[in-house]
Amino acid sequence: MSAIKTVDSIIHLTLSFPFFLSYTEELLINNNDITGIVDESVCLVRNNTIPGGQLGVFHADCQPPPNGGEPQIQCSCCTACFV
Image (cartoon, rainbow, N blue to C red; front, side):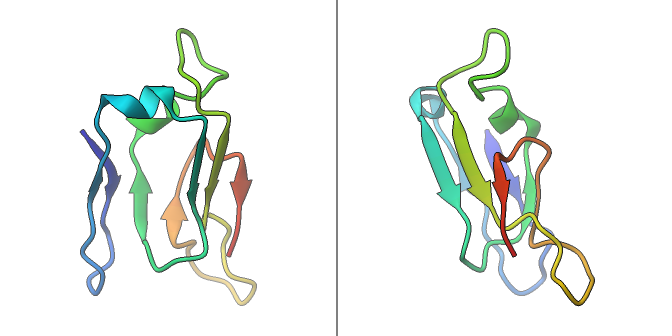
């Protein structure tokens, strides 16, 4: 299962998370050079979904930069977004 799909032409990084992600309580992928789209499968293991998982804290660089433009990460279920 691919958790982050790359859209950046410079950084080609695809992270794959095995099934243990459903037992992860905190995922912090902010303050780095990762770019892309968080797959909805990650959102399904949030602790606010049914049946859900244990993921309660999910930080990413999903806030647009102050001077405009797209955020590094596109995410629909992050608990906190950073630049």
